[in-house]
Length: 338
Image 1 (cartoon, rainbow, N blue to C red):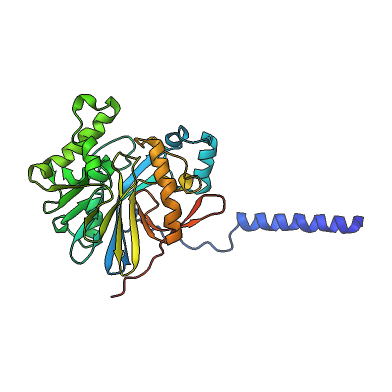
Image 2: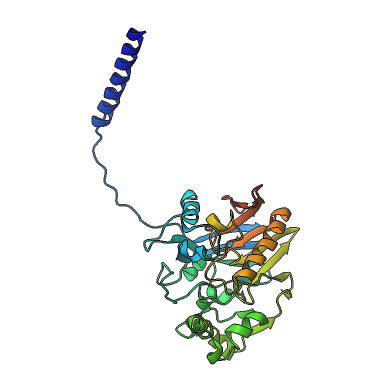
């Protein structure tokens, strides 16, 4: 028995020495071939078909979101929220938060070229990673031009969804009509300055500056949440994140897609715990209710989802899990075959 243990010990030691020798002295030493790194990424767009509709996700940049933004609206501790983010391997930004995509969606129906949300434009804020929005670069890489867009459907009027319609006081999309819900208009455009909370004033000013040239030229129209805004495009009330926050539902050849705006901000936290709200929600209770009421139906129906802050390209499906949470199933790369 002692002999067997001794031999095993010698064999193990020999293996360790052999491994160390391999690591310390490579078998081959090919000459170096220093090729400069490219340090760039593929163009920020991705495309799928929804029946006869072409749907293109457009990358506008990233925002830095940390767990503190969720901790006041959750029973989970900051440590538990952080562990959810770490477990998902969510990429981190240089300023310390989670690298959260900002995505707009372009739908070519054959009759209209519709842009849902318009990115942040030139607005600067501490949460935005990029100084300037990349939506126009992504749009042009995808084969389209700003002047070709005839309809813009903002899910709401926060800067990262709406400010991109205008740069330096000029219309970015000169031939587009913007459709706003009356519920959004009531707060962002109609509230007297003296009734706007101090912490909301910068956001309201950004929204009003963005809308101004389109208002002047009569290129803004209004609808009520829940209306069919134009033929084949229905607004879906998802109130809470803002007072008039809407999704948009598209149908073509029996296929369905919901562009849900900011129904969810962080998939690592809110897919597992959809009851968790975020600091950006104007009414956290209503936002939580909208999410909890909407997700089960989307998972059951197998609807294609387009989410502004899901991992790019933000397109995929939901699967309900037994623990009450959800699993995000992203689309896979496919060719568009004519």
